[in-house]
Image (cartoon, rainbow, N blue to C red; front, top):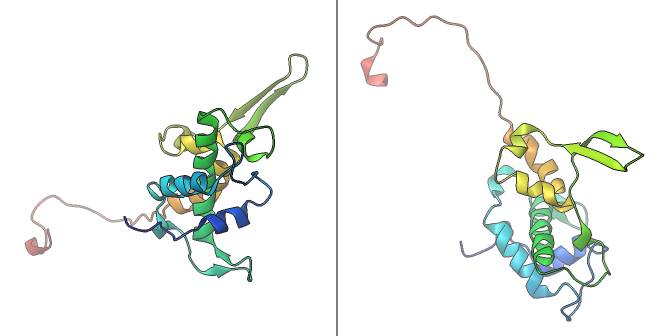
Length: 169
């Protein structure tokens, strides 16, 4: 694959996540190379045919559903990469992003909270990874309705034997 799908730039990433990360040239900031690496990683897992690429919004915030999903997927990979190297300094909330499921239990005395995810997410080695960051969860929110297909049932009778037109088999 020679180009990112959909085409996305570092500038578009920074424009979507203006308050999430501290951008800059030092290793204590999110650098353009970090963002580009995240865009590249997302390109390997993102399926553009699932999303609408019609323009949404007005300039300078013109985007599309596909681009928003792709950038959230990229932000997820950026956070995982930053966390893997120990994070940045304590500026910017993006690196502290953690996905949370549906709250299934709370407690006060020992301070406890329980979360759960649907089994089709937790049973999928690809989808479950996205529950680790809030950006991954945002991506899942856009993705999940597109993974559900419509099914129809037709009543009829099947009799064993030769099909009416053997050429159709």
